[in-house]
Structure formats: structure tokens, C-alpha cells
Length: 310
Image (cartoon, rainbow, N blue to C red; front, side):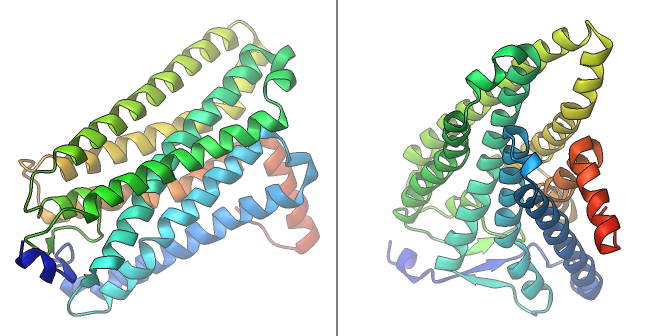
């Protein structure tokens, strides 16, 4: 308990094997972060400016892109600084803030994908009732759910983490997260584990809902050529985004909570950054290239301003 009060800094050991290539990693990371900012802002600004895109599907997509910017802002600036430093350290408060941002971003991504699957289910399976069911009030409620639930749960998780005295300050990753902090707990973390199990159950239920929605959509779409075209244009991009995100997040979650996972530091780093690289880049790119209305809007801007976004 006495040692726990002395933990004011955490040491990030995720970059210990990359010292010889830090300049290369810095350039690649900077390019990636600038790309993430560019493609997400492009889609956000396009959706906000074009009145024809003020529909639920595009509003939810805009929210997804905002979350991509939010989550990566909690990682890349600190990571770029670490690549230029000889010792990678982060303050106790800074570590908690980074863990909170990444935690909420991951959960918000899952909630946003769930909301988008519901929107597509109603649009394709119950098209005549779509505007009756998905009203502006419903859109606001779904947006509140996709953001407020993750923020609230993450706040509880962070509060439970803060109360735990720590007996160590080594984090074997390139960023802070709650499992890495709790590995140094001096006391039992029973309540934290219960909350983690609750979050896993809720996330699994959301994933099951997504699977159910798309099973119904596939059944509906295979019946007609028009339905198959609509499914390809609006649902396939969502499915690709969902599969990529779930896969990379699952790897990082297993590595974070299961201490017996025996993997190299390079592999751990690769898994750790996948959900901070792939979804934020591919979400706007996949949708921008596959949704015809957004593609047409971007082409109009290309002609008007003399440059191309994608």
C-alpha cells in the first residue's frame, strides 16, 4: 500500500525492440495519422455540408468517423512523441486519460456498428415503415446510446481502477489500457472483473444482434436483383468494417486480460495498434468508395475544386 502511493509514472516498454528503426516508425505513423485525419474529416465535412446526405445512414457514418478521430487522438500524439524519446514514460493521470479514451472509442465503435446494422435492417427489411420507425427522435436516441453508454461504462471502469493501489509501473505495450494497469494491482480486482464480464456480455449481445440483423437482410435481399444491389452497396461495406474491427479487437482483448498468452513483443505491438489503424482508415475509405451518393458528392467537389479526395 505504501509503494502504491508512489506510482506517479508508468514506463511503456512496447518500443524496447524498435530503437534502431524509430525514425522509420515515426514517419510511417505520422503519415498514417495524417491519413486518418484527412479521410475522416473529408467524410464528416461532406456529410455535414450536403443536405442530401442528412439521412440516418450518413449521420451514423459521420458519428463513426468522429469516433475514429477521437480514439486515434488518444494514441498517436503520445506515440509520435515516444518514438522521438529515449525513455517512454507517461504520468499516472495521462495514462488513465489515454486508457479512458481508447476504452470509450472501442466500445463506441461496437455500439455504432450495432446502430448502423439496425438502421440497415429497418431500411431493407421494412422499407415502407422506415421513416415511421427511424424518425429524427429515434436517430438522436440511437446516437445517444452509441456515445453515452460507452462513456458511462468507461467512467465506471476508470473509477474502479483509480481506487486500486498499484505495486508496479511497467506496461508492456505502446499505450496505456485498463488491463495493463490492473496487472499491477496490490489488491483483488473482483469488482473490476465483474464489470469486465458485464461489458463482454453486452458486447456479445450487440454482436449477436448485428448477426441477426444481417441474416434477416440477406434473406430479404436474395429474393430480388434490386435487393442484392442495395445489399452490396450499403451493407457489404458495413460488414467489412465490422469483421475487421471485431477481429483486431478480439486479439488485443485476449492479450490484455489473459496473462498466459506467450507472444513476442513485435506481435503484441502489431495486435495492439491494429484497431487504432485499420478501422479509422478503412471506415471512411470503404464507405466513400462504395456508397454511390457519397461518391457522387465527392466527384462534384473534385470538379468544383480541382482535386480528388479518394
